[in-house]
Image 1 (cartoon, one colour):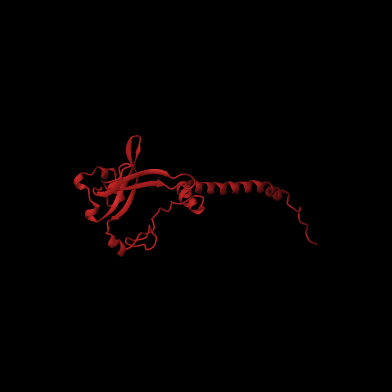
Image 2 (cartoon, one colour):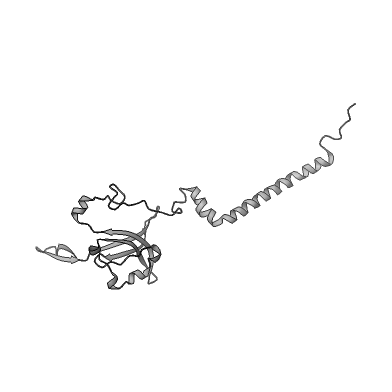
Length: 202
């Protein structure tokens, strides 16, 4: 428990101390570029009685939320917990997974923190722990900022055969158009000849 000291009322002279369970709140938001970010889901964990994480994203399901009490873990006892946790939201009165978060949580003393400093996020010193660059899928990009990736990952993968068929039909129709345009003149030249019958040399 974490002790919190505060006055019960603003006119109170003495401060009361209450103990609050250490809870970690994780929220998942959709990063919109041209509008307000959309809230997707959240996860609230009591660090004294944490959900045991899944070892892989495939095993990170809603069943993790129904763990019995004897399966819960304490971060203060284990010191380090790493794995996948589900973030949930309410849809039509039912709880669904809004995202999966991979985290590594570690409890250190103030002395250990001074000996092994860490930056904010991936800022220097990026150690204790070292944070790698996020592994985003190749399709994670703004379509208007990368036309090549848009053609490759969105249009080509989804409409590849339609594009190939369109190109083939386009060249066939182009060939027929050129043939029909040139055939009458070519046929007339064959019938009458462009310069008339050639004269024999004397």
